[in-house]
Image 1 (cartoon, helix red, strand yellow):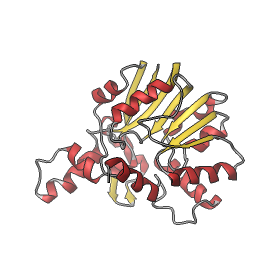
Image 2 (tube, one colour; image 1 turned 120 degrees about the vertical axis):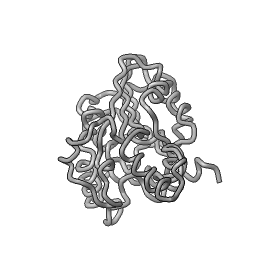
Image 3 (cartoon, one colour; image 1 turned 180 degrees about the vertical axis):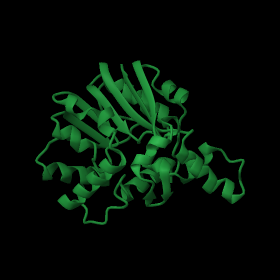
Length: 255
């Protein structure tokens, strides 16, 4: 089995954010719980996605998962297209759109080989996705290819020098008597699907070197303040931790 197929199978079994939702998939209650959980853990997403600004614009989301951000682009009137590696994600999003009588173009495919013409979209959005694909630089190139000149990119990657990375290293290197293992090695083997990568700020900038007016930031998240699998410190405690140690690294820019 190829690495990419292992990644596909992982996310096809557990679309992002659905692990803790113990409700019947595809129901209004399921999607409401999914959205509530997303908003509680990542309330800052709208600052970066700028959903309200996308009305009438052609927007591509790469890796929509169960559609938590995707549905907000649709609600705000974007001319919306999405692509995901999994059939499960596509199925969940189609049901979600139907429940709200919304429309979008849904594709199942690979971030490294986007099935779209050059310079097609006004915005390309990908939140926590392309660090899972085997050839992340290729995925970044594809995002740049399908974006119109003057179009906007918003991509979130995992940040190597974060509290999550430190937690992972302690659990899977230090406490296992292998302190020589690097952050990158333990993240590759133990964070979500096999092959996950985390980037430094210079590495992220290099991935999207074709952008102008680039803004890059890191963000402390509940995942940085995790106590156990399902327990987190209160969100207000994030103010005591510098964002430079945050798990989320966000790249914004104009082509």
